[in-house]
Image: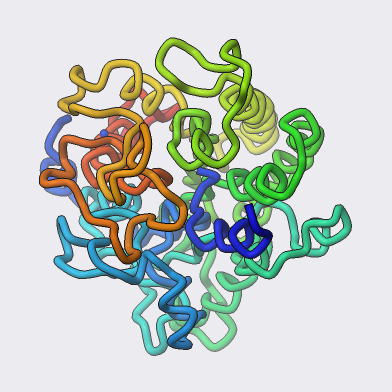
Length: 377
């Protein structure tokens, strides 16, 4: 594949990378003042488009093109799905407005904002450059950059010139830090690293995420949700772009075991680090681990159990191959179209989940059992 195509892969990536009534959760009363999210395209509510406003950039950003947004918004909103994201469902369940992107000029951020942006990494861009991965797509806004954006937003959040007195307000707000790590692996795997080479950087990725938790606590955060890595070996993008010639690398459901093992390695390290942070901060912080991997893995293995007809194949694509995924005709590009009923699919575009999956994921975080402890516990 040409280098220009590999670079363009980055413009598609988000992560890399579900039911009691959500309305009932909101009806229980507003628990939080606000919600603030940090992460990649799994929780980007529009920053990528606000920071890439040229006509050429908009054409390359498929999330800015139909049929993205078709299910709920009826138009593209630069969200990587057919409708709402997990953070959208969390906000609605908690009686909060949908999170505006933090780069929205004149936005009202008193009740929340998303600092998340497509292509975001846990590792700083300077570090990626130092290991030969200094491509511009990975310089949209790494985790530490997003936290700096949040610091700059505090006067707007708290209504004070320098953000004074914010700690009490932030102590009653919900923070979602991640997922992070998916795009770090994308930068590596799509540009020549082996899975084993990428694995060597997993401890540093986890160190950075843990540092992010500490930074938010220092600013006043108490309730922090930290999502783990997804089973990337079950996503059409990876199965198509970096397939294996060894049949033993695939499990019985068609997922690539080495890629999923990379995710489970990160998740095991992350959970240990979060346990240490809980011990350090005691009752002054409530750190919740959100288990993307287990929930989505169960959906892939048993789609019908969750109301789906399809696990890995994408709803939106040009009909290519086993997974309805072609890089040159991916969702949002000429020749691609959406399936008739996205709610029956788990994968929207081969990279991002459908709104239906995001709804179930949010429910699993709010009440359990896929968040430890559950947000509403």
